[in-house]
Image 1 (cartoon, one colour):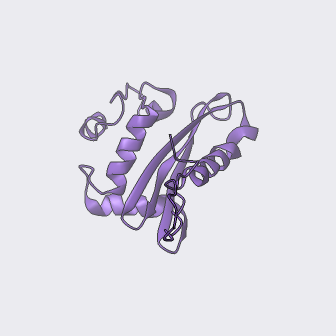
Image 2: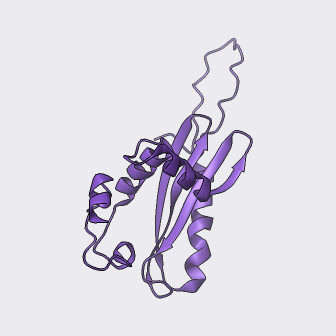
Length: 152
């Protein structure tokens, strides 16, 4: 197991001696940034694993889809059902565009469990690029269209 974690370059690559809970109670740790890099590689099928296995994981994790897009996600909860860190991680695929995401949330108890996906979906909705309105020839100078949710 340890060799696979190292091969995948997953987080701090530490599994310790208990292979049944190393990802929940440590010592394995991964940052949200590292998680999104890993998920991007999985979604692009570039992990050092058989492509068929990566396709199967993508199918298993697909939680929603529509014409031209799919949402792949997985929840987790360190120390469930007690207080701890919960997460909702995955990626959105729209055509050839893949957008990985990782949400971490402080969980006080079971009542917080649905908040992971609710907050995640709301965040994805808010961050989704909005279509640029069609350009209409103008007789005067116009300021370029700026999407308020994405402009920094």
